[in-house]
Image 1 (cartoon, rainbow, N blue to C red):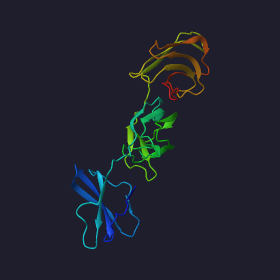
Image 2 (cartoon, rainbow, N blue to C red; image 1 turned 180 degrees about the vertical axis):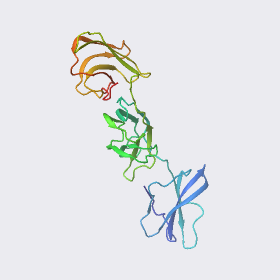
Image 3 (cartoon, one colour; image 1 turned 60 degrees about the vertical axis):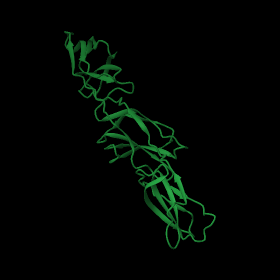
Image 4 (cartoon, rainbow, N blue to C red; image 1 turned 90 degrees about the vertical axis):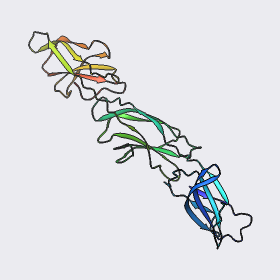
Amino acid sequence: GTVTWSNPSSSTSIASYVLYLAEMADSSIENRSLLGSVSYGDPRSLAIPPGTQIRNFSAFLLYLQSALAEQTTPAASLVFQDLFPAAHSLVFQDLDLDAGQVGGQLTWVPPGGAVTGVDQQSVYFAQAADGSGRSQLSTGIAPNFGSLFLAAGTLLNTYSHFVIYAQSSLAEQRVPASVTISDTIVSLPSVSFTDLDLDAGQVGGSVQWTAPADELHITMYSVYLATDHSGQGRSLIGSVVVNSTYIVAVPENTLASSFAYALVYARSSLEEQSTPS
């Protein structure tokens, strides 16, 4: 940003203005760091570069300097606060049940706008919490908005984090808010089918399966007959809700000529998985 000031009432001997960052203890100056100087005839302002480290500094101090020396007591001081907050409390529950894919709602507590100086937010995939190896998912998000929907089937690739950057009219923040991505993967330990139809070319019986250890994001299971293990040419036999008896009946006299596999798909509140068990 920019620090500005006015000329003192008596300025005949002023050669320049000198601006410092200062660490204050009560009214005492504990430490200071030079930001720059401005000649008396130049505009009475000094630009502070984006990313300037404030460390333990809490005030700007302005000193007057003559041709002989800089004054020992500052002519003016300004206590500041670092009012550029990040988003925080990021939460993401992956409701895509396939490996290497994510989907669902990313939520966070936004930084706000008018008081904080934030103009917009941007969300990225990243390969680390510091934002390295990032790939943009969305930008131009309002500063008081804290939600982004990812469609099922969004490829995770090598990314491990969501990161959110706030941006002012001056610059994007350098250290993002982040959350680790946990890829929800559902694979059933076992699926079995016993054919009790004794006629050639026909099947009938029941498909049974064992639930995975974690069913947190599962709402339903659906059973299909298909021509191959990937689900090609599939035909729905039936569905059961989670936490029930995991058996679906295949009607007797079902023609087996087009089907070679009985497959079970888990479904979340978002979508049915694309890779069956």
